[in-house]
Amino acid sequence: MFTTMCALLAAGFEAEISAGNWSAFRSQMRDRLQHQEGPAVEALREFYQAHRVRDEGLMLSRYLWFGLVSGAAPDFPLTLRRDELPPEVLTLEGFSEILSNYYKEQQIGVLWRQAQPIYSREISRLHDEIAQLLFVTSGYLREIDDASRGRTFAIIIEPLVGRITNVRNFGDHYAIVLSGTEELPVDVVRHAYLHYLLDPLPLQYSHVVAVKKPVFEKVATAPRLQAALKDDFPSYFAECAVRAVELKLKRMSPGERDAALQRADEDGYVLERPLFAGLAKFEQSEPSMKLYFPDWVRSIDAVAEVKRTSAIQFAAAVPAQEADPSEEVVARRATPVTVPNDQEAIASLTEGERRIAERNPRAAEAAFRRVLAKYPDQVRAWYGLGLVALMDHDGSRAKEVFGRLTTGEHAATQDPLVLTWSHVYLARIYLGDGDQGLAKTQFQAALDVQGGPDQARQAAQRGLADVASEKPAARP
Image 1 (cartoon, rainbow, N blue to C red):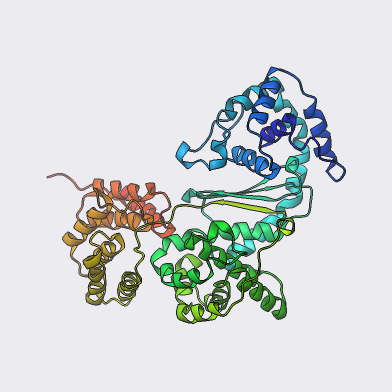
Image 2 (tube, helix red, strand yellow):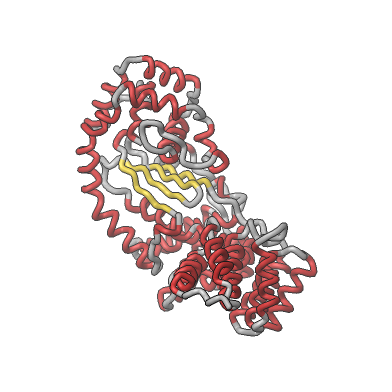
């Protein structure tokens, strides 16, 4: 990030802006970088001009994205596959080589070592406050962050970006770029961390969340609703969930909370209110939010909320000059397409899940088969039948269903929850049959699924440990 920002300033970014309110370090660095000379610098400036756009905020955004997804010096290779890259990075194709040549010619590694004490001081100054904020937030949700899940949350201190706080999310990787020269933007950091914790849940429990979509359809045209959310119901639900938890964590009087909920309604975030109310029961329960989430969603009375939302007068759009200067940019993950846009089918899936929880396999099977009568390849319904087979102790049938969901043309490749758990259940069946080799293969396949639920991944890890600890059966 440091090298990218040095290159951006050397190329002429913000060259005409007064440095009167800049930090001394940032101002001095811009002056030094603008006077750099050499073939690599000239190539850098030509690249910058060729890719320049009028909106300097957009320019900064592109290079911040590059700094986040590029690898180490001196080559700065992109760390994601091309189809995983944020669109902004694709506009800077060829920049890795330009930056590498600039890094070597201008000895940016030496410059970084000279500047490092300034960065270390800012990191040290903010560390304890950030650690406490994240501890309280994860503690409220009763969540423990596990780096082995492949999801990351990073806070990067980069004084050269200026005062704007930039929040970025690409897939399962979340990052905040802070200037470090100001007080910690507590609300922004907490909001981003809550997204990191809560964003996967509407996708993991998409069939539960989908029942509340009629409420979203009433607010999708609200003028103040973020444009990126207007056609993305799971992300809209996650945003409302984040805002609801924020209200619990902020030190606000009852009057201030009422006013905040009123603003949320007027801005289009109408599910914030019932989700906030639903947190009272969560606080009295014991499970983590990952386990409690379906009950939290079901606490929303969709019919009542549609009626309430119909009476809300949404606020007019905010003029551009009044918009919040902090920027949140989210590259949202694709929503699983395995749940049909059919309220009757969604209701049957929900009923089947409820019957499974009640240990009523016959009623669950009937509900899932109603879905399959209309949608023969519906993976959530097939998954439900697999659970029914397990409840019936029908290993042969369960093996058949979970095998269908993990391999071949009907595999649940678009639904990480179903795919991961199907591998786990299949592995357990093989383990029960005494086939440790196939069990190990299935447990490992569960861990290889991108975006699988934590519980399933933990079950797979325990399964692998069990396989490793057991002695193979002696051959006759």
